[in-house]
Length: 204
Ligand code: MG
Image (cartoon, rainbow, N blue to C red):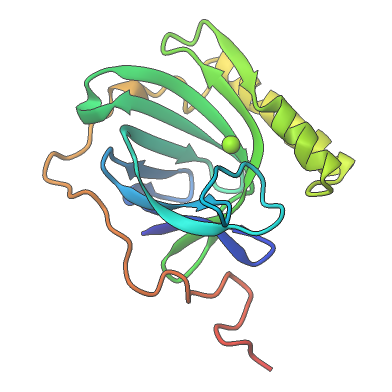
């Protein structure tokens, strides 16, 4: 399956993922270390944080194991990070993002800058990239109302965390992949798949 980030119709990132669960209650996707995905870079090859100006995609090899949990419709994912081979649980991460939209090959969504970093034992947490959200607001990438909604969604996710509501109480930190699973690879044609609700080749 393929996870694409799309900003105003242009691809911002592409990740091949393994499906752990795809049910009405939960979408769980796994990105093992050594997965090669497409990340955005400035045209000169430098790092880029926000989808303003031009960018191109380059291959990037992931160094940690990542499990993404998303309750369908929720505007955030809860991620779990491990050192390669599940050698050590690094912690939890709330990624504010658009609810995923199903495509012919997987899901499309877009990151929404703000994140929450949570310690492995859940005793400590902090906001991450608040400056990036402010920058995005200043650059007109989000409206003030959208920025407020993103922060509200983060606060809702924090409530789940602090109340030990799912997925924070489900033992996901003890989850392990089937050892026979391969490192996922991008299929051909990932760039040509139409976003949901659009014609593949321009339509009318
Ligand atoms: Mg993020």
